[in-house]
Amino acid sequence: MLLAGLLAVSLVWGQQQVKVVYHLSEGTVQAAQALGNIRNHFNADPSVKIVVVTHGPGIDFLLDGATTPKGQAFTGAISELAGRGVEFRVCNNTLVGRHISKDKVAMEAQIVPSGVAEVARLQAREGFAYLRP
Amino acid sequence: MLLAGLLAVSLVWGQQQVKVVYHLSEGTVQAAQALGNIRNHFNADPSVKIVVVTHGPGIDFLLDGATTPKGQAFTGAISELAGRGVEFRVCNNTLVGRHISKDKVAMEAQIVPSGVAEVARLQAREGFAYLRP
Amino acid sequence: MLLAGLLAVSLVWGQQQVKVVYHLSEGTVQAAQALGNIRNHFNADPSVKIVVVTHGPGIDFLLDGATTPKGQAFTGAISELAGRGVEFRVCNNTLVGRHISKDKVAMEAQIVPSGVAEVARLQAREGFAYLRP
Image 1: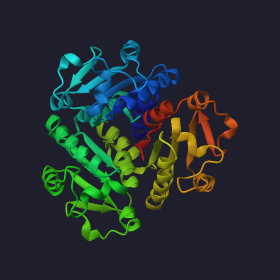
Image 2 (image 1 turned 135 degrees about the vertical axis):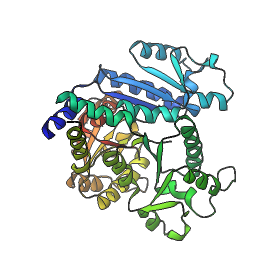
Image 3 (image 1 turned 120 degrees about the horizontal axis):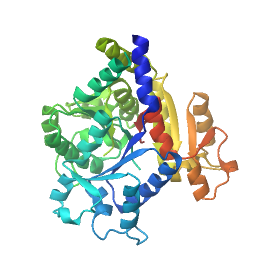
Image 4 (image 1 turned 180 degrees about the vertical axis):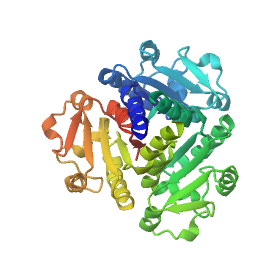
């Protein structure tokens, strides 16, 4: 039975899709780099499930009119990655604290009550790995 | 038996309290932000277990007389969060390396031999999620 | 059977070696600090398994002629830690993107297709904890 339990654990680890939360809280420089990381991640592991959780200045690239440090709009990269299954989540505490209307958030993004709680929940409840770009 | 194993794993993941280690190694700017994150975390998940592990400049907010970048004492926030069950841990290697007496460390904090080893141990042995504010 | 499953899980957590991925993406300042952290980690837990995964500027300390911010060569510390079982991995996407020849990479390091995918894989497939120095 011990072996059966170990077998079950190894099956859970060995066969499921890799899931990873990218944690963004810094701003558009970190975000631009993270989107490049995510493209590389897909190239190396096309079946990976990626959720990007943002709070604080980390949400900025998901707001209306956001541009990369090189002046390009983020919208193209966001919709491209959303089309590949990447999910984007924005912290509602940040929206309230910074007086930002939900209308300003990219339609691809989902609003969650707390970014940090979401980062912990995905790891503890849904078996996500963690990555801070 | 396989199903039993999977069931056991899902019970472990699904029903236990979420536990998360906040890893602080930068200084009082990061610490002030982290304490705000932790308050938001509790609002979203009142049952969460949070351990704050500090080393390097990350210990500074737990030293006598520490103030936030806005000039407020950290002591109030530390004792408030300790009262809600947050645990604070300080790296002894840092104390030794920086010649800081244990007397200078807030009474709410516990001294551990190594901050980085504690961060890894909590994840590997006690099922904590990881978060770097 | 449920108890057997829980027992299996607790045995997996309780008896295996702690394994941890150090994630480096910033540059030689972060790397110098990380190597110090790793030495302290070994002092506190001599049986720990450490894999250092690097991408972006995080690979710089593993390139020919790299020196710490204080001007010391990294080669001594790298070979010392490799001798204690630390593994170093370098992102091939970074090498290609920055036009760096594989010949420039320290012989102790292994080249992996993607640094971020490796960080996620180690956590999801091999039970590694995560640490960002």
